[in-house]
Structures are given as structure tokens and as C-alpha cells.
Image (cartoon, rainbow, N blue to C red; front, side, top):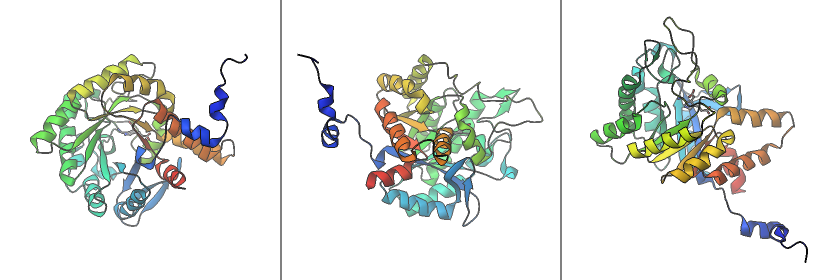
Length: 331
Ligand code: PBG
């Protein structure tokens, strides 16, 4: 009898394939990253991210309602603040009436069931484009943590459901948990960017917020390699994720996505909290660019990548494709 096994029996037609499919996608698997701009009625497309816009708060709220109707249940929010508000302390980050805080309030009042997860890191507020405070030519870890706590508490006061530290400072999850609890926000969760790599895939995001590390009057690191991880490392990702869980993270994140799926699986096997994956700006840009040229089938590549991220172990995927993928899934 040859062949001994016939795996193709389970692939005969789409009905059979659907019966044995191991992984499924639904709109509630996605979080949508949103860029917020000052002003009113502002909607500016990011050149390196076709279809993604910086929106003022009024238009953001309209978009959030649409996302909710499509089945998306979480948004990650990032702000682009005016240059005049930037300094080396990042103090605008905890202004109770700042752009982020106003955005959180507006979204929660228009769509209370949408889970709002603001980014916690100083880069949009830093004159140097770094995620923390610069002292003696490097990012000062503990001083930055103190600033991040003020920032996170101000997000919680504005109504955030989760805070999402993306800065990679040591010990920040513990400090954020203590700070949130001390302020009475026991139910505000922490989604920690635990294994965040120093990646060139973040280029378009930094264009969107004008937040790339820049030349300065004092010595500053030219890149983020003293805090974000070296992409040659795998075991280190597990170490970082376990630390964050121990410090109180409710969810951990691996970032970027597609080139890092070995890390996703490794972290998934090591922790007992949901693992999230950030399918980042450069990954979005690559698919858009290749499909604009007719070199790749946009929708098929989008769904394949999202499914593969989920298969690798993601419980949730932060992706700029969230809306387009949800529309396809709802068809
Ligand atoms: C900032 C932050 C970055 C991203 C999310 N939060 C950029 C960076 O670390 O330089 C990247 C997201 C993306 O590329 O889509 N702390």
C-alpha cells in the first residue's frame, strides 16, 4: 500500500479544510494603532504608510466608532505634539490637558467599550527623539521610569484601560504597577512591550510622529540600541518577558512581527499571560509598496501574515491592517 499516509484527504476542498483549520482570525484579535494630531478636522496621510492618517481628535473619534462597529475592540494611541512642547524632561507627557489625555477622554466618552491603550514612552515629547531622559550621553533609566509613572497615571486619570510602556527601561513595569496602584488604578492593566527590538522596521512610524533620534547640542546616542534589544538575540527575549510578568505585566508584547515569529513562539511557551505582537509600520509599508506595484496580492498577503502571527502564538495583534482585515473577515 503506497503511500502509507494521505495528508491530502484533509485538503480536498474548502469545507474539509475549514473543518481542520487550527487557527482562526476574527476582528477582536486586532488592535488598531492610531496617530493623533493637534487641531480640528485634520486628516493627513503618512507618506510612507498609504491609507494611514494622522487625525485630530474629532475625526479620531469618528474612526473609533467605525472600528468598533467592525468588531475591533482595542486601539493603541500615539500623539504628534508640537516641537515647542518638546524638551529633555518630557513633561508634556503628563500634562492632564495634553493631546494624549484629551484623546483618551474623547474616545472613552464617545465609545466607552473600546479598550484604549496609550503608548508610554517619552519619544514624542523628547527634543532628542529618545524614549527617555538624556543624562551624560545616555538614557537615564531610573529618572525616565519616574517620568513614565507620571505619564501612565495621567493616562489612567483620563480613562485609559491599559497603559503600554514601549520604552524598554529596566524595572519600569514594577514602577508603573506601584504607581497605578498607589493612585487607586488597580484595574488599569499593563501591556508591556517586553521584547522590543532595535529595528529598522520602525522607520515609517518615526516619520508619522517626527520622533526619530536626532542631532543635538549635547551628546546623545544616535540610535536606540542601548535600550531596545539586539535582533541577533532570542533567549534574551524570554528573560525580558519573564521579568515583566514577574513585575506585574498583564500582557507582554513582541515587536516587530513577521521577522520575529520564532521569538513569539518562544515567549508564548515561556509565559502564562497573553502574548501580543506588533505588526509594525515598516511591515505595513512593505506590503503596501509591493502591492501598489502589482508584485504581491495585497489582501492575500495581509491575511497570510496576520494568520501566521496568530499561529505563532499571538493572542492579539496590533496592526495597521486591522480595519481592512476586519472588513474582509466580516464579508
Ligand atoms: C515609541 C514607539 C515606536 C513604535 C511604537 N512605539 C518607535 C520606536 O521605538 O522608535 C514603533 C511602531 C511601528 O513602527 O509601527 N516608543
